[in-house]
Structure formats: C-alpha cells, structure tokens
Length: 574
Ligand code: FES
Ligand code: MG
Image (cartoon, rainbow, N blue to C red; front, top):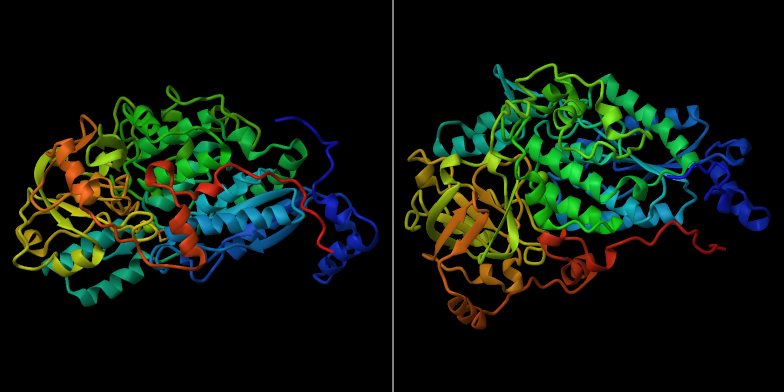
C-alpha cells in the first residue's frame, strides 16, 4: 500500500476529458439527474449489485446499496450502482456453480470497461461471493466486500430450524415419521426474513472467508440481514472505499499468502463449508498466490472446531453475532493467525479483533475447550483420488472415520435416483455409496448432490449415516460422512471412473487416505477398456466451460481466467 493522493483518478479518463469524448461520457450520465460538480475529480465508486428476485438471499440488496451510497456520498465519492449476473443457489439448474466463472467474467469486464476508481461488492448467496471477488481480483482496483447477512433463525413449533434441517426433514418424510404436507408449514417457518442461509453453510462460510481475508470491515460475517447494524456496516463500507481509493489500497495489497492462510485456519475453526476449498483456490488463482489443496490439510490439521454452529453443531449465525461475531472467533485463534495481515480499514486483523469479547462460550469455544476436537476439513489422498478429495470431519460420524466397505456404484445421478430405493439394491450399513459423473466437466458444473440420501430400507432400520463418495460437491449446510471433490473426476477417466460394485474401499480420515483394494495394474487394465461419455453441449457458455474448466483440486476456475488483466483504461469507444 502506498499513500498516493496525487495519483490521477482512473475515472478522469472518462469524466475529466474535454471535447467530444468528455461530452459523451458526461452528458448521458446527466440524464439521471447528476449535477456537473459530481464529475469534478470525485472518486467514482461502483456498487456491484447481485440483487435479484431469483436470488432470494440477495432480495434486500437494493436497500443495502442505498446504505452504501449514503456512505460514499458522505465521504465525497460519486456512487454508481450496477447489476451483474446474480447466482441464486436454490433455483438455478443444473447448479449455480456452473455459472460462477461466467459471473466472475461479467464482474471483471464490467469493472474494467467502466469509469470506476473503486468498487463495493454486494455478496450474499453462496456463489455471489466468490464470483464477485474473483472478478474484482482480476482487475485489482480498490475493493471492499459487503455481505448481505444471514436470515434470522427459523422458528418452528418451539424449535430453532435452519437449512441443515431440510435434509433431516426429507429423511423423516421418507421414513414415514413426518407428513409431507407439513413441509409446507416448515418452509415458511424456516425462511422468515431477509438474508442467506442461517447456518454455517457456504454463504456464511464465504462471509467469514472475506472477513478473515481482510477484504471487509470487521463484523461483516455475522450481522443478520434484518438487523439495523447491517445497514450501518454497509454505510461505513461506502465511506471507507472512498478513502481506500485515495490510499490506493488494492486487493493485491491485502490478499497475500498469509491472508489466505488465515482464512483457511478460520474456516477449520468455524466448521465452514467444503465449498470454501474450491472458491478459495479459485480466488488465489486470480491473485496469483500459489495456494495448493494440501495447504488446507497442513493449516487445518491441529485446529479444533470452535464454533458450535449447524451443520457441525447446534447454533445459528444469529447466535454467532450475539456471541461476539467473527472477531471473537479470531481472538480465540490469536496464537495461530498471521496477526500482522492488513485489512481494508487499513488496520491489521489483530487491531480489528483486539476489543472483541466472547459473550457465549456455548457458541464460541476456545482452543483449550473446543466444541469438538475434530477439525472442519481434511484433504484425502489415495488411489481413489489421485489428485485429492475432501471431507468435513466435524460434520461426519466418528464411527466411520476409519471404515472399509464394499462399493455400491451409481454411474450418474439418474442411475442413483432410479435404484437407491429399490428392494433388490445390494446394500447394507457398511456399504460405501459411490456416485460418479457429478464433477465439473461430467455434470457439468459440479452440483451439490454428494450428500446423497441413504437407501430407504436402511433408513427404516435406523441407519443415519454411511460413507458416501463422489466427484461432486455438497451443500455447505449438509452433513454426514461424505467424501467430495474426487479429482480427477469420473469424466476425466481416472481411477475413480473405473470403480465397480463390490470393490473394497477404505476411508481412513486419521491417515487422510482413501484407497481401493486394487493394484495399479488392475486399475490400468480397467482404464484401458473404458469409454468416456462426456455431455454433448456444442455451443454457448456451457461448451466453453466444459472445454476449459479445471479440476476441483485447482479450484474449478477456467484455465484462461487465472491471473489478472489489471485496470488499464481501455481504448475509447467513439
Ligand atoms: Fe442462498 Fe443458502 S440458498 S445462501
Ligand atoms: Mg448450496
């Protein structure tokens, strides 16, 4: 970071111009009722908005943008709000993940092509955070993230509920313990306010990630969407981005390898989403930080679960906020964080958490007295996954952490749906369910189907968890002994693609291994005889995606999007 108030504003290449070009750049803006004085050298701040009624988690973002705008004006900036592709987790098919990279391209090109000196990213639902951060990092002008905040905790018949209960209620209905008509009442009780999923799912993990990385103001992660303090944070972020432009404090100044290491440690301690791995790798790829899948193991290994939040624990994001928010968690981690890392407010992460207090030790544990000794993330290696796979031990079953069983293989999701509840499926509680062809290229887009439901006949016998393995992802709100992100995915023709029914697979989370009882020669022989079926999409974005998406262990970004093209002002348009 360099103090450089003399630096010419990027936007002056538009609004500071004379003659025909300056006329064109200013005149059409003036139709929005903008006075001439706004164009006199004020920092132009973009508010990158993912508001959409098709992204319900971000449905309150126009109000949030209004608060950001207030802050920008107060600090002497010139706010301009613009929309980008919004990725709604619940409605988009086949999966919002297919479009994360597309949205990141939208963000990157929208920022670079326009007269912006700084940008505020409004992020909420799962993929809206990584896509915006990835895009902004590839431009690298001063950037601050404002998250939309979690929903209030759902309340149903005297019980606290949240997204993780969707999977439980689903099993209850299949087991006959709950009337499916009752689900309609539960739906309304669960999503009762503005905001994203109220558990430590992917959206909350992303909100914690950006705070841990230092690209938000302190406390960003946990303030509920419906709490007035969320608007205050948005306003303060609007004020701060104007100063950041003057200081020329850019993402690349903040997002060092140490900042990424902090984020990984925090994610382990909060039991964050497995999706965090893929998104953080993709962001690091844009910044040019050499982060590897195995770094997550190295850095998470000795970190117990401190946050007692669903799906690993009991409480909700609202409770985390009342307990002191992420700053209180960071303070518990002070012995292992890189405390000198700088953040968007110009202070170090340590200065930001210094005055935090833990008001509820049932929500936030300590290193000496953690909520669970199991860490939030483990990376597995072995001949099932030559390039790795991940599991979330904190949300898995202790008795399955070392387990051998025979594979019950489903070649794709349709195969799984057709056979999982049939009487003649050869399966018992010790079996290992294997689901193929749900990876980045194979599906395409890597959907959240990895925590596939258990066979009905085993549920009826009271079985509540089994080892499941796939090349797909799992919702951050999901739980169970679920191995995900197998790389290379089945569609790439690695070992995973040739696993057959009855093969014996051994998961050993203690040793971080996942192996199949076959020799290299046997695997090679099988691979020689496979025919790969790839989905036939011969045009459009999906075709581009399939041809360029990288494997999960690299972050599933597209190969040509890695790195950045910077913020140079493009050539004139007229
Ligand atoms: Fe949007 Fe969960 S569906 S955060
Ligand atoms: Mg999801």
